Image (tube, rainbow, N blue to C red; front, side, top):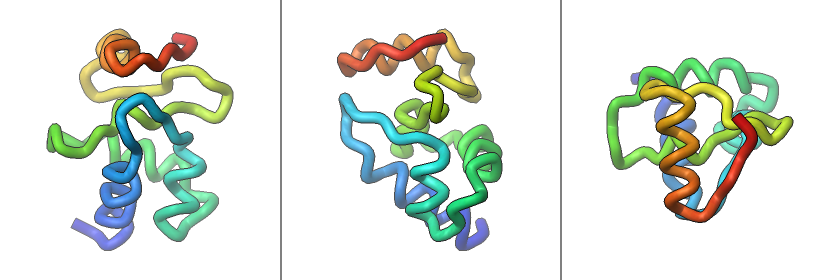
Length: 86
């Protein structure tokens, strides 16, 4: 695992239930402010349930991708009281 991946995971772990961050915000927190697409690639490969990657959304307020499907992402967010556009 690269240090960038570790920094992305660490930043995402800090997002509490009921909150979201954008891919751009996570990129900035991981030290690479222009690497929002790389953040998406890192999170798409995540299989660790302890990393709440479903809480990371697109800057336009839409759900964005999710390894288990956008519908599953939106359902998990809704269970936390967060509603986003598909």
